Image (cartoon, rainbow, N blue to C red; front, top):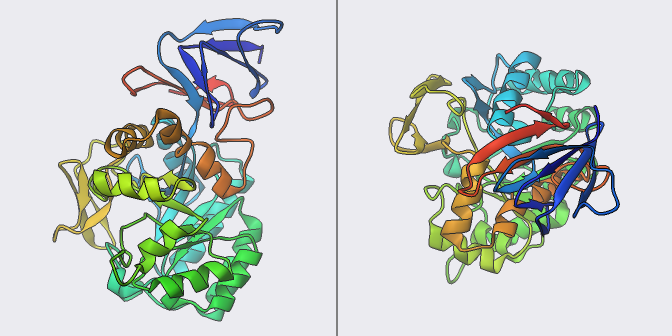
Length: 378
């Protein structure tokens, strides 16, 4: 692939904005961000107004394009989810299995390992959200399938951690032992606390054992109040990372503003999207229950929120507007911060040697184009 240079109103590199700059790429990698002096620009491509930004990274993706992660998931299904997400601006993701049977969990892990071996574009690993949760904070998860972690579960996850590019596991401290958390963390698993009714003290014990992330801040967890900090308080007071669903439905805008003022680093955006993302369908069946799409949200028949009808492009715009944060911080929450959670320096940023995965965002925040490895895909 010949050297190419892309120019827009500015380039965001994952941390800093470069006004009137040019992104230079070659052989699928970034060469430089430059003002065009003293460097071979190759073939110039003007994108017009707007920003060039790193491809977005989504660490909680239950499905997309009509495909849901579940019992029938195989390499083709994971590839389809990743393709749909790429067309919507997410060039890398963790397909996510919500609470299911041991057999389905094992099958999805095997599919993920095969996807990694096949080098499926955009596949960064897996996120297992459950089944080791607290039924009192089940959300849309099937309470009948929630259970404590046993030795076989732990052995499966430890093996998977060595075979996958990344493995995130959402669990409730009430459903596991601290030595299990420690073993997972030592194996490289991103242990994320969520779907829990635990006290702040119990959450802090789990963090001390190795948990370094939290799943969808505020949702399905014990809340912060004046005499008990709860899981929310423990997250806001800790140095670890936390996902946030910034659709304005899962978390109120004022609440987001307060949380992001309290926790100035480590919060990243997730879509928590379902199979309906990238599809015109209005509903689909999940474990014998209907997930219904309407008024910008996904719910069960009883109104329980069941994932989100959200893209990261929308989330970046909404968190900036609702929480009153800078454009740079909002973009970092979808790029460099999730990359840091994964321990990756080659994605989520635009710097010499990083992958040429990038987006063109129009002045109104809409998606203007998507490039993966320097090749336009949307």
